Length: 92
Image (cartoon, rainbow, N blue to C red):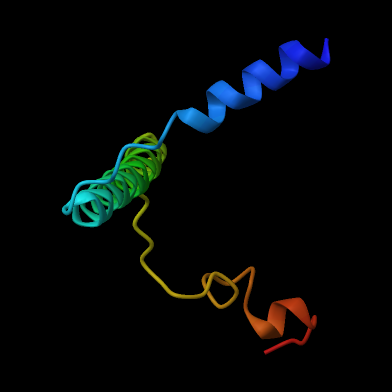
């Protein structure tokens, strides 16, 4: 068993790592930049999609409601039944 292990370790020791090319670091940083750009684009597209879905949902929800126009700002003072004198039972 130990001789087998020694043979394997000796073979591993003989294998020399191939030297890296001179533009390895530039290629590595270029690849990292591409990955970051893809992540950024994906994030911004996802955010735009969420905003679009929320806007469409709000638009559909608002479109189903009827528009009501009111003639006066307060309903409390409109008409004789809601006048302050009628509510306090004061004769005029």
